[in-house]
Image (tube, rainbow, N blue to C red):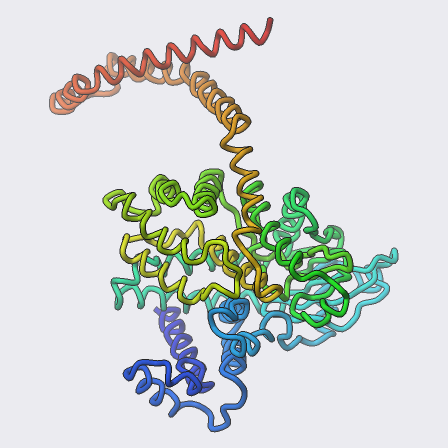
Length: 523
């Protein structure tokens, strides 16, 4: 009860904080709002500070900073989508990506020494002031005692407790939204918050981040010009992560990229393709790809840092994703629609043909066009309308994938306003389709099926023993069945007799095939 009240007060505080910064319905956008919203905005500005300085994006950034790290994450996503929220608004939010206020240097040094169990002087010959501070942690440049330059990430003091309180407030807010607005339930607000909450919990254990960095480094080997810094395991712990130093230019500084002669168009292509290669080939991807976490080296290579939020998708989701993207790339909207239905994204009661027509209405106007020719806000609005029309619900297992696609495409647009997402994605998707759905993929699927069948057949003797033991107990009277139970068993037995008979034949045939395969392979 107390926690619920505390969460309610935190939600109220969040609303008041946004209102005080005129960050809910900003005065600058009043002309674009309908009359009822203009009236609500005027009322909320009664609570706003008299000195509403800065752009709406800057005011929202200050409000989110006051509210805490979970809210800052939301602002970081918006900062990558200047095409949706506007250039000025996104520019005001850009400070959330890597320019948060740092905490005290001495506290950081004490935390490192305490976590690693050694005096700082035994670990590093140099340990500089923080170079970048984000919502959850800050990064220091340091030199190890053996002379290597490294980046040391240190969690903010008390961040775990603050994140937990933020998440509880968001969970309460999601529950309120679902109860007050039945239409919102198809977006699964509570499941969405739960997914974000789980990712945030993992973000506060830097040992897991170190493991994610190592895993992503293996996946990135398949992508061209995409690199992950090496983890310094002896100097990493739950609240401290040490990696090799990345000598690169942050993507938040486009002027520096131009001054260094880096091809921003190629960099945008690398970003799009590296994300898809990791997600589709290995089922793992960096799930916080805002510009503050991405750097370019002098050779045009792309480096990623900050692996606190890692996304993963299973083989089934990867296959559906590839089929959907391939359908759009080849303008085969029926194939894309069928993939949606097979994945269960669209309820079976709807028509595949109708849904294919809806996808065509989205895809045709933007196919082959560069980013600056596509009004993304209008595309998103149309997609929301389609999800409503076809009763599509939010898929919690794809939340991080969708979020990262929005982020990476937004950063690519910022690098190159004429970025052609379709052209960049096409080689990755086509290669995946040839490998996974061509002869090689079919052969691999057949081997996997045989392995699964082999495992099932190996379990058959144990299952027969279990049934025999159960039969013996029934005969001895240890297990008693009344007449009604026997009648129900008999009815089900008659109904399923042919099914069981066919199943026995299938198992026997499979067992025979496996036996023949085993004999043939031994010759």
